[in-house]
Length: 254
Image (cartoon, rainbow, N blue to C red; front, side, top):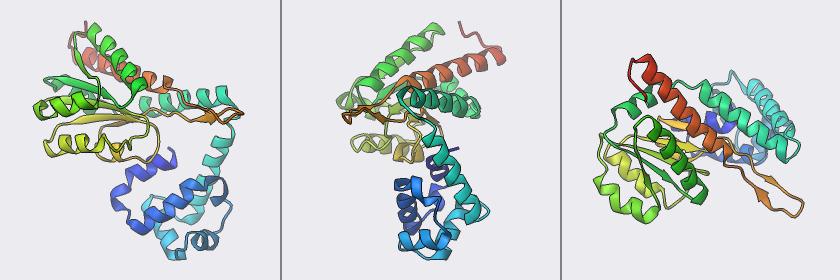
């Protein structure tokens, strides 16, 4: 499990001071693991006890264990090496995270939903949504693709609590997306988020979150390379696990 995922898991227990310390740590992962607790506290303009309490809130036994975790995660980042190695690592992490995630609650949502809407917050994410629509049509589950923000705004008032919405977002923090998601929360409409593995607002707002790890790399001319293959893999796994659920429940998937 990565630091960002741990932050999401325990986010409700964190205060502003905790988040300030974590912001520094996330921004300086390559050096924080080298610091003693006093050095990290000084760097964050925080107290030693604040850093220790934060480590325990994140379910570490103390700062020493937290520091070992940060060192391990830094080694994982450094091991990526190049563009292809980074892609391989992203794919492996996505597979591992979703395959080991308990999926019964999500499968029940898919099965019980009156209608299933799927929305991608960008062009690449929308293409992923179309692939999900194609997959689920094979088992006669027809996903309704929401094509853009304007369409989402239009139909949001018609989405009911017996429906289900799947939202694909690379960052999970797209400002224009949050008001729409807040409407879903207020109306008690369940939604599944699929985002990059990082601390993000969308994942915090639903218990039904999946992570599609996509680590950006830069070319020599500083062009950023971001792959959406992990998002396709996440949706494929969502689909296949649902087919297995139907089969094990003596339902007919096709």
